[in-house]
Amino acid sequence: MVYSDEEILKSFEQSKDKVISFFKRISKDHGFNNDQTDTLVNSVKYLIYSLKMNKTERLDAEIQYNEENRSEIKDKLKRLKKFYSANHDLVDEIAPSREKERFHKIIQNKIKSLEKSLDFDSKSRAGENKGVVFALRDLIYCLEDFDFPRTKQIDIVYELFKEFNFDDYGKETHTKEILIGEPEQKERIRKYFQSPLLNERKELIKMNQYIQDNQDRLSNSPEAKEARDLISGSSRS
Image (cartoon, rainbow, N blue to C red):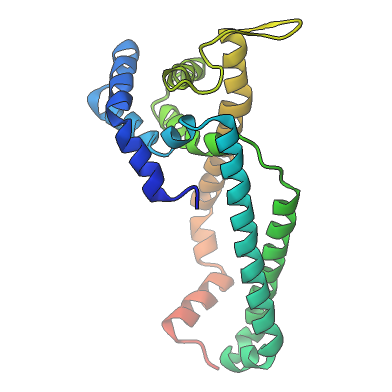
């Protein structure tokens, strides 16, 4: 598979000196301490692999990943449906009497979830920068954790893209009507790379806050108690 950890981390190791040199320069310019610099270096381990690929290679990798992912989902869905169809009565037999309906719902919901994933995956188009956005997450989250200004986050991403000759970043290009230079490229980073990741992080923070605020209520709910009883073996069959 294209996205194997071994290949990705090997690519990072080959460029590690360059990455360290880059972030030392960035840290000097922006006042990051040594620990923060090390964290920034580690945050791009998976990103460097994508930055070193050209558009065609990234698109091919994305297509291959989508195909493999689709194949895995299909296989899981097929096996789960086959099991449930052939062993419907077995689920009743192995489930505690008061948990039969829940056991069936767990399997049914998993089937629905896989079907939705397969449907979404079939409609989702491959894009040469999807892998880059995904791999950029660690760096953006890291800079957010440092309370680093968002406009300067874009500056760092731009400099990193330029350092690794990623697409047209750092180069001026022309269309029939406009010149595409640094301002346009930074706006592209803001819109297509940074903004989706910041929105994602915002939702994660909200979800974590909700769990924290409702931890006592959730942990003391009847459903949670039943789950603990089931795990500890105190449920009566």
